[in-house]
Image (cartoon, rainbow, N blue to C red; front, side):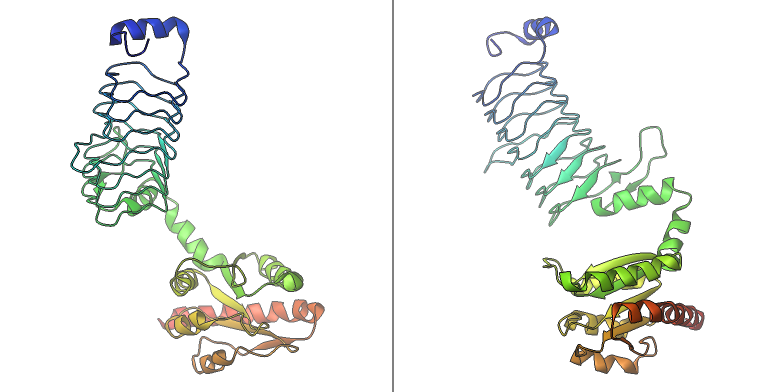
Amino acid sequence: MLGTMNADSWNEWRQSHGPPNLWDADLTGMNLAGRNLAHADLRLANLEGADLRSAVLRKAKLRGARLTHADLRNADLSGADLGKAELEMGDGGLYYVPTVLRGARLAGCNLSAASLIGADLSDCQLVRVDLSNANLDGASVYGTSCWDVDLKGASQRNLRVTRDDQPYITIDRLELAQFIHLIIENAKLRDFLDTVSAKTVLILSRFTDARTEYLDAIRDAVRSKGDIPLVFDFSRPASKDVTGTIEVLARLVKFVVVDLSDPSSVPHELATVVPFMRRTPILPLLDTSASTYSMFNDMFSYPWVLEIRKYESHAELSGLLPLALESAEQTAVELRERT
Protein backbone atom coordinates (compact mmCIF):
# COMPACT_ATOMS: atom_id res chain seq x y z
CA MET A 1 0.00 0.00 0.00
CA LEU A 2 2.78 2.41 0.92
CA GLY A 3 4.46 1.93 -2.43
CA THR A 4 1.31 1.95 -4.57
CA MET A 5 -0.25 5.16 -3.20
CA ASN A 6 1.00 8.57 -4.22
CA ALA A 7 2.06 10.97 -1.47
CA ASP A 8 -1.31 12.79 -1.24
CA SER A 9 -3.32 9.55 -1.06
CA TRP A 10 -1.00 8.05 1.52
CA ASN A 11 -1.06 11.13 3.72
CA GLU A 12 -4.86 11.24 3.57
CA TRP A 13 -5.01 7.55 4.55
CA ARG A 14 -2.61 8.25 7.41
CA GLN A 15 -4.95 10.76 9.00
CA SER A 16 -7.43 8.03 9.90
CA HIS A 17 -5.13 5.04 10.35
CA GLY A 18 -2.28 6.32 12.49
CA PRO A 19 1.44 5.43 12.34
CA PRO A 20 2.22 2.33 10.27
CA ASN A 21 4.12 -0.67 11.59
CA LEU A 22 6.91 -1.26 9.08
CA TRP A 23 9.25 -3.17 11.35
CA ASP A 24 11.82 -5.13 9.31
CA ALA A 25 10.05 -4.13 6.07
CA ASP A 26 11.86 -4.30 2.74
CA LEU A 27 11.45 -0.83 1.24
CA THR A 28 14.53 -0.97 -0.98
CA GLY A 29 14.52 1.70 -3.68
CA MET A 30 10.91 2.66 -2.95
CA ASN A 31 9.56 6.12 -3.81
CA LEU A 32 8.51 7.53 -0.44
CA ALA A 33 9.02 11.20 -1.25
CA GLY A 34 6.69 13.47 0.68
CA ARG A 35 5.14 10.61 2.67
CA ASN A 36 4.01 11.20 6.24
CA LEU A 37 5.85 8.55 8.26
CA ALA A 38 5.85 10.39 11.57
CA HIS A 39 6.01 8.00 14.56
CA ALA A 40 6.24 5.03 12.17
CA ASP A 41 7.94 1.84 13.37
CA LEU A 42 10.76 1.38 10.84
CA ARG A 43 13.13 -0.54 13.06
CA LEU A 44 15.47 -2.77 11.02
CA ALA A 45 13.68 -1.68 7.83
CA ASN A 46 15.68 -1.80 4.61
CA LEU A 47 15.41 1.66 3.01
CA GLU A 48 18.54 1.36 0.90
CA GLY A 49 18.26 3.62 -2.13
CA ALA A 50 14.78 4.78 -1.13
CA ASP A 51 13.56 8.21 -2.20
CA LEU A 52 12.69 9.97 1.05
CA ARG A 53 12.90 13.54 -0.17
CA SER A 54 10.73 15.82 1.99
CA ALA A 55 9.37 12.79 3.85
CA VAL A 56 8.06 13.43 7.34
CA LEU A 57 9.86 11.06 9.73
CA ARG A 58 9.37 12.99 12.95
CA LYS A 59 9.86 10.73 15.99
CA ALA A 60 10.01 7.68 13.72
CA LYS A 61 11.62 4.53 15.11
CA LEU A 62 14.54 3.91 12.76
CA ARG A 63 16.82 1.96 15.09
CA GLY A 64 18.91 -0.40 13.01
CA ALA A 65 17.34 0.73 9.73
CA ARG A 66 19.42 0.58 6.57
CA LEU A 67 19.48 3.99 4.87
CA THR A 68 22.56 3.69 2.67
CA HIS A 69 22.15 5.57 -0.62
CA ALA A 70 18.73 6.83 0.52
CA ASP A 71 17.84 10.31 -0.74
CA LEU A 72 16.96 12.23 2.42
CA ARG A 73 17.01 15.77 1.04
CA ASN A 74 14.72 18.01 3.09
CA ALA A 75 13.41 15.04 5.07
CA ASP A 76 12.24 15.88 8.57
CA LEU A 77 13.82 13.46 11.05
CA SER A 78 13.33 15.64 14.13
CA GLY A 79 13.08 13.51 17.24
CA ALA A 80 13.66 10.28 15.34
CA ASP A 81 15.60 7.41 16.92
CA LEU A 82 18.40 6.50 14.50
CA GLY A 83 20.38 4.39 16.92
CA LYS A 84 22.52 1.84 15.05
CA ALA A 85 21.02 2.98 11.73
CA GLU A 86 23.26 2.69 8.68
CA LEU A 87 23.64 6.16 7.23
CA GLU A 88 27.02 6.01 5.57
CA MET A 89 27.83 7.16 2.08
CA GLY A 90 28.39 4.27 -0.31
CA ASP A 91 31.47 4.11 -2.51
CA GLY A 92 31.07 6.58 -5.32
CA GLY A 93 27.41 7.14 -4.45
CA LEU A 94 25.66 10.43 -3.95
CA TYR A 95 24.52 10.73 -0.38
CA TYR A 96 22.08 13.29 0.94
CA VAL A 97 21.56 13.92 4.63
CA PRO A 98 18.22 15.29 5.82
CA THR A 99 18.04 19.02 6.31
CA VAL A 100 16.22 18.63 9.62
CA LEU A 101 17.65 16.26 12.23
CA ARG A 102 16.51 18.39 15.15
CA GLY A 103 16.28 16.28 18.31
CA ALA A 104 17.25 13.05 16.55
CA ARG A 105 19.04 10.36 18.52
CA LEU A 106 22.02 9.10 16.53
CA ALA A 107 23.77 6.33 18.43
CA GLY A 108 26.44 4.22 16.77
CA CYS A 109 25.71 5.63 13.31
CA ASN A 110 28.31 5.73 10.58
CA LEU A 111 28.24 9.18 8.97
CA SER A 112 31.82 9.06 7.75
CA ALA A 113 32.39 11.48 4.85
CA ALA A 114 28.73 12.49 4.87
CA SER A 115 27.61 15.96 3.83
CA LEU A 116 25.82 17.73 6.67
CA ILE A 117 26.30 21.23 5.26
CA GLY A 118 23.74 23.54 6.82
CA ALA A 119 21.93 20.66 8.54
CA ASP A 120 19.80 21.34 11.58
CA LEU A 121 21.40 19.26 14.34
CA SER A 122 19.80 21.22 17.17
CA ASP A 123 19.07 19.11 20.27
CA CYS A 124 20.59 16.02 18.62
CA GLN A 125 22.18 13.26 20.69
CA LEU A 126 25.37 12.12 18.98
CA VAL A 127 26.65 9.04 20.78
CA ARG A 128 29.53 6.98 19.31
CA VAL A 129 28.84 8.49 15.88
CA ASP A 130 31.50 8.31 13.19
CA LEU A 131 31.70 11.77 11.60
CA SER A 132 35.25 11.39 10.34
CA ASN A 133 35.84 13.39 7.14
CA ALA A 134 32.22 14.62 7.24
CA ASN A 135 31.31 18.17 6.27
CA LEU A 136 29.40 19.99 9.03
CA ASP A 137 29.96 23.50 7.71
CA GLY A 138 27.17 25.87 8.63
CA ALA A 139 25.24 23.31 10.68
CA SER A 140 23.06 24.46 13.57
CA VAL A 141 24.27 22.73 16.74
CA TYR A 142 22.33 24.50 19.48
CA GLY A 143 21.66 21.93 22.23
CA THR A 144 23.62 19.18 20.46
CA SER A 145 25.26 16.70 22.84
CA CYS A 146 28.36 14.75 21.78
CA TRP A 147 29.76 11.62 23.41
CA ASP A 148 32.62 9.62 21.86
CA VAL A 149 32.15 11.23 18.43
CA ASP A 150 34.87 10.67 15.83
CA LEU A 151 35.52 14.04 14.14
CA LYS A 152 38.91 13.24 12.62
CA GLY A 153 39.26 15.10 9.35
CA ALA A 154 35.78 16.63 9.62
CA SER A 155 35.14 20.15 8.36
CA GLN A 156 33.44 22.15 11.12
CA ARG A 157 33.37 25.75 9.96
CA ASN A 158 30.73 28.23 11.07
CA LEU A 159 28.76 25.98 13.39
CA ARG A 160 25.86 27.98 14.81
CA VAL A 161 25.62 27.63 18.59
CA THR A 162 22.57 29.86 19.19
CA ARG A 163 18.85 29.58 18.51
CA ASP A 164 17.12 31.38 15.65
CA ASP A 165 15.84 34.05 18.04
CA GLN A 166 19.32 34.74 19.46
CA PRO A 167 22.31 36.64 18.07
CA TYR A 168 24.10 34.76 15.30
CA ILE A 169 27.18 33.22 16.92
CA THR A 170 29.34 30.55 15.28
CA ILE A 171 32.43 28.51 16.12
CA ASP A 172 34.60 26.04 14.21
CA ARG A 173 34.70 23.13 16.69
CA LEU A 174 31.72 20.93 17.58
CA GLU A 175 33.28 19.94 20.92
CA LEU A 176 33.49 23.63 21.91
CA ALA A 177 29.99 24.60 20.83
CA GLN A 178 28.26 23.49 24.01
CA PHE A 179 30.85 25.16 26.21
CA ILE A 180 30.67 28.45 24.28
CA HIS A 181 26.90 28.51 24.59
CA LEU A 182 27.20 27.84 28.31
CA ILE A 183 29.45 30.87 28.65
CA ILE A 184 26.99 33.00 26.70
CA GLU A 185 23.87 31.89 28.54
CA ASN A 186 25.10 31.36 32.07
CA ALA A 187 25.99 34.61 33.76
CA LYS A 188 27.13 32.62 36.79
CA LEU A 189 29.60 30.47 34.87
CA ARG A 190 32.58 32.37 36.28
CA ASP A 191 31.26 31.69 39.77
CA PHE A 192 30.87 28.04 38.83
CA LEU A 193 34.46 27.77 37.60
CA ASP A 194 35.67 29.58 40.68
CA THR A 195 33.74 27.07 42.79
CA VAL A 196 35.49 24.16 41.08
CA SER A 197 38.94 25.57 41.85
CA ALA A 198 38.03 26.88 45.30
CA LYS A 199 35.90 24.03 46.62
CA THR A 200 36.92 20.78 44.89
CA VAL A 201 39.58 18.38 46.21
CA LEU A 202 40.97 15.61 44.00
CA ILE A 203 41.53 12.28 45.76
CA LEU A 204 43.91 9.80 44.09
CA SER A 205 44.64 6.22 45.11
CA ARG A 206 43.88 2.58 44.49
CA PHE A 207 40.80 1.98 46.62
CA THR A 208 40.19 -1.77 46.79
CA ASP A 209 37.18 -3.15 48.64
CA ALA A 210 39.36 -3.62 51.71
CA ARG A 211 40.21 0.09 51.75
CA THR A 212 36.74 1.51 51.12
CA GLU A 213 36.45 2.78 54.68
CA TYR A 214 39.68 4.78 54.26
CA LEU A 215 38.32 6.42 51.11
CA ASP A 216 35.11 7.25 53.00
CA ALA A 217 37.17 8.84 55.78
CA ILE A 218 38.94 11.12 53.29
CA ARG A 219 35.69 12.01 51.57
CA ASP A 220 33.98 12.80 54.88
CA ALA A 221 36.88 14.98 56.01
CA VAL A 222 36.78 16.94 52.75
CA ARG A 223 33.01 17.37 53.01
CA SER A 224 33.24 18.48 56.64
CA LYS A 225 35.28 21.47 55.43
CA GLY A 226 32.50 22.35 52.99
CA ASP A 227 34.51 21.12 50.01
CA ILE A 228 33.62 18.68 47.23
CA PRO A 229 35.53 15.35 46.93
CA LEU A 230 36.48 14.25 43.41
CA VAL A 231 37.83 10.67 43.34
CA PHE A 232 40.13 9.14 40.73
CA ASP A 233 40.45 5.42 41.48
CA PHE A 234 43.47 3.68 39.93
CA SER A 235 41.96 0.25 40.68
CA ARG A 236 39.52 0.70 37.79
CA PRO A 237 40.70 -0.06 34.25
CA ALA A 238 41.43 3.07 32.23
CA SER A 239 41.05 3.16 28.45
CA LYS A 240 41.89 6.84 28.06
CA ASP A 241 45.11 8.78 28.58
CA VAL A 242 45.50 8.59 32.37
CA THR A 243 48.29 11.14 32.52
CA GLY A 244 46.31 13.73 30.60
CA THR A 245 43.20 13.11 32.67
CA ILE A 246 45.02 13.53 35.98
CA GLU A 247 46.73 16.69 34.78
CA VAL A 248 43.45 18.27 33.67
CA LEU A 249 41.71 17.41 36.94
CA ALA A 250 44.65 18.52 39.08
CA ARG A 251 44.76 21.91 37.39
CA LEU A 252 41.07 22.45 38.12
CA VAL A 253 40.97 21.65 41.83
CA LYS A 254 42.11 23.38 45.02
CA PHE A 255 44.54 20.63 46.03
CA VAL A 256 45.18 16.90 45.61
CA VAL A 257 45.11 14.18 48.27
CA VAL A 258 47.18 11.11 47.34
CA ASP A 259 46.92 7.89 49.36
CA LEU A 260 50.18 5.98 48.82
CA SER A 261 49.18 2.95 50.87
CA ASP A 262 49.10 0.54 47.94
CA PRO A 263 52.49 0.14 46.19
CA SER A 264 50.71 0.41 42.85
CA SER A 265 48.34 3.19 43.93
CA VAL A 266 50.18 6.08 42.32
CA PRO A 267 51.57 4.96 39.00
CA HIS A 268 54.11 6.70 36.83
CA GLU A 269 51.46 9.03 35.38
CA LEU A 270 51.20 10.99 38.63
CA ALA A 271 54.98 11.37 38.92
CA THR A 272 54.88 12.74 35.37
CA VAL A 273 52.39 15.51 36.08
CA VAL A 274 53.45 16.55 39.60
CA PRO A 275 56.40 18.70 38.37
CA PHE A 276 53.97 20.88 36.39
CA MET A 277 51.35 21.49 39.10
CA ARG A 278 53.04 24.54 40.73
CA ARG A 279 49.77 26.03 42.01
CA THR A 280 48.19 22.75 43.18
CA PRO A 281 49.43 21.29 46.50
CA ILE A 282 49.82 17.52 46.78
CA LEU A 283 49.00 16.02 50.20
CA PRO A 284 50.40 12.44 50.52
CA LEU A 285 48.92 9.96 52.99
CA LEU A 286 50.41 6.59 53.96
CA ASP A 287 49.26 3.60 55.97
CA THR A 288 52.42 2.61 57.89
CA SER A 289 51.73 -1.06 57.19
CA ALA A 290 52.29 -0.35 53.49
CA SER A 291 55.36 0.62 51.52
CA THR A 292 55.58 3.97 49.77
CA TYR A 293 55.47 4.06 46.00
CA SER A 294 59.19 4.30 45.31
CA MET A 295 59.10 6.87 42.51
CA PHE A 296 57.12 9.29 44.67
CA ASN A 297 60.14 9.91 46.92
CA ASP A 298 61.60 12.01 44.13
CA MET A 299 58.59 14.34 44.30
CA PHE A 300 59.41 15.92 47.67
CA SER A 301 61.82 18.39 46.09
CA TYR A 302 58.82 20.33 44.81
CA PRO A 303 57.44 22.89 47.29
CA TRP A 304 53.85 22.03 46.41
CA VAL A 305 54.34 18.42 47.60
CA LEU A 306 53.67 18.35 51.34
CA GLU A 307 55.11 15.97 53.92
CA ILE A 308 53.60 12.49 54.14
CA ARG A 309 50.94 12.14 56.85
CA LYS A 310 51.16 8.59 58.25
CA TYR A 311 48.48 6.58 60.00
CA GLU A 312 48.00 3.06 61.40
CA SER A 313 44.23 2.79 61.50
CA HIS A 314 40.99 4.22 60.20
CA ALA A 315 40.54 6.15 63.46
CA GLU A 316 44.02 7.65 63.27
CA LEU A 317 43.47 8.69 59.64
CA SER A 318 40.19 10.39 60.57
CA GLY A 319 41.97 12.21 63.39
CA LEU A 320 44.85 13.60 61.35
CA LEU A 321 42.88 14.65 58.28
CA PRO A 322 41.42 17.97 59.53
CA LEU A 323 44.86 19.50 60.22
CA ALA A 324 46.38 17.91 57.11
CA LEU A 325 43.65 19.31 54.87
CA GLU A 326 43.97 22.70 56.54
CA SER A 327 47.69 22.67 55.79
CA ALA A 328 47.04 21.80 52.14
CA GLU A 329 44.50 24.59 51.85
CA GLN A 330 46.91 27.13 53.33
CA THR A 331 49.62 26.00 50.91
CA ALA A 332 47.16 26.41 48.03
CA VAL A 333 46.57 30.03 49.08
CA GLU A 334 50.29 30.71 49.32
CA LEU A 335 51.06 29.17 45.94
CA ARG A 336 48.35 31.23 44.24
CA GLU A 337 49.64 34.41 45.84
CA ARG A 338 53.11 33.77 44.44
CA THR A 339 51.89 33.29 40.85
